[in-house]
Length: 120
Image: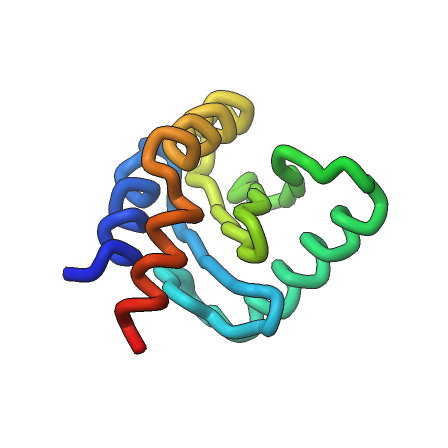
């Protein structure tokens, strides 16, 4: 199993993660666990790029409240964007903090870049 999959499995095991999607700036889906990933990838990239252009110093994550309470969180990871749809009833702030910690603890960006290099 390559590192890319292992990293996303760690994210998927966080309580409250319903779906996740990893995309790069070229709209290429690197790994996904989401329904309709191509459709979601375009929206994910658009909101990530717009947030990056609004905040010159970057952003920690974006939060989109959804009526069905499966809220969307978007995390910038280098040139990638990680979108997470949370389960209903989960504390969004706690989930965001757990994901941020996991991304930091596992050096997500390094492992993804390494796995992409070895996949070729």
